[in-house]
Length: 113
Length: 110
Image (cartoon, rainbow over all chains, first blue to last red; front, side, top):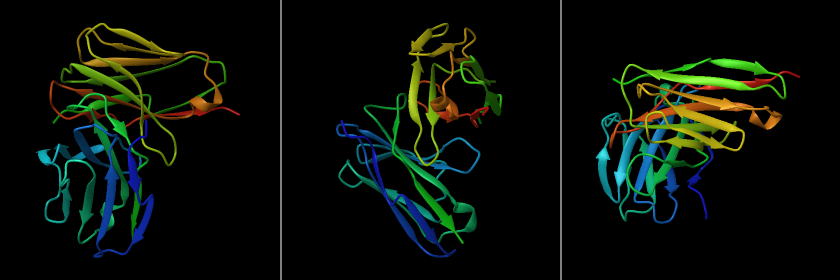
């Protein structure tokens, strides 16, 4: 069974630029999550989708971050414009139903200069 | 908000030693998960616990869901070099989001 796919694996941008990350969850998993992991910390949930609807985006900085999952399968997370403090690993995870056993992708390491 | 305190923050072990780490919270959870993260990779699920008092093993790993529902423990027996990495606990209350601890860094003494 293929795992959660993410791309790109690494991205370096300058502050105020835009960036987008892509995620393809495990086949059949209805729930998809985007997490931000700052160095030395555990993952922090940014947004949770159930199929193509948003379940929880309470910790998403909506002035600069946006995410979509239009067809209920793959998803994109965008940052526009990026700030220095956005430097982190962005992890995508999926689960069959709701929260519980979540399976993570390899992450995208973002560096904002 | 909910916070998880994970300890120790880091530890050095000798190959062959047993390892213990734990996670505590001021809030109760009904699910505890333990993940391992290697450098440059996403967290990998090791053990999931769903009932207070539950003791579950996965090879050399054993985890327990505390009776108070506010803590969990992970033990690794007879550690080997590939056990090196960061171990995260995560708690969940019913349908709410997972809350992660800050991680325990496991290093092997050379």
